[in-house]
Image (cartoon, rainbow, N blue to C red; front, side, top):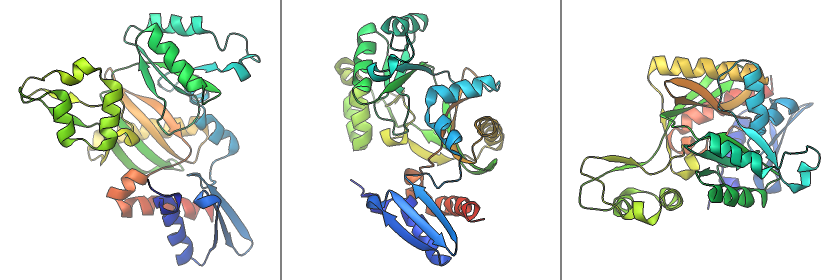
Length: 311
């Protein structure tokens, strides 16, 4: 387990402040940072360095609200419908309706994705195709979160993250899911155990049943080990070099940022049915996995954002 004090984000802030004679206080185990230079005092908390307004931060953190904002601006985005837990649903009648959730499932034969409405950790994200799976996922999420969001499951061919600062792309990378190639002799389980990381194997056990894991893929067949593109679930960040794809993704991400009114964000765009759509807007810009592979690039991005903080 990586301690908070070892986060690349925090270490980058320390390096920035040291080089510019900015006084630094680290509180709450490294989760809160107070930066002071002369009469200027700035705060960073979590992965938020304070450039975004409270409203923009809240909209980005609320998956259903963000999807609504993007839709109202005419921006192609994956829809997310809000459902509330028992503590909040009394304020909006029908917002906890299991019947409405089941109707959504019936309308989407390929299934649904059910996830907490707020947060960016990638935890408690479920693909469901049956009423029982849906009810189980809803119960697990609402046991830990006050609300959830449901979106139709779509076959994502590609997912790209664009890190933006004031409508300027600082970093653009693809999230590449882990895969194995069948040899006609070994099961999916054996092939994965030979190459996958612990995080990837954990995700594998949740996405495939025993029969699928024990099946032997034909020689030459490539199988993805995860339907998610989440970095915490084992996907790898790969810098995007294709100019045309990069331009398309950046243009869409800038439109999304402008619609939300956000200055510093990481925006996930996905390729579905031949077109790019916005999946999520993240106000807290977390680049820990990328930073272990491209530390100089991540440091430059955070430093550019900090320059804007102290401008």
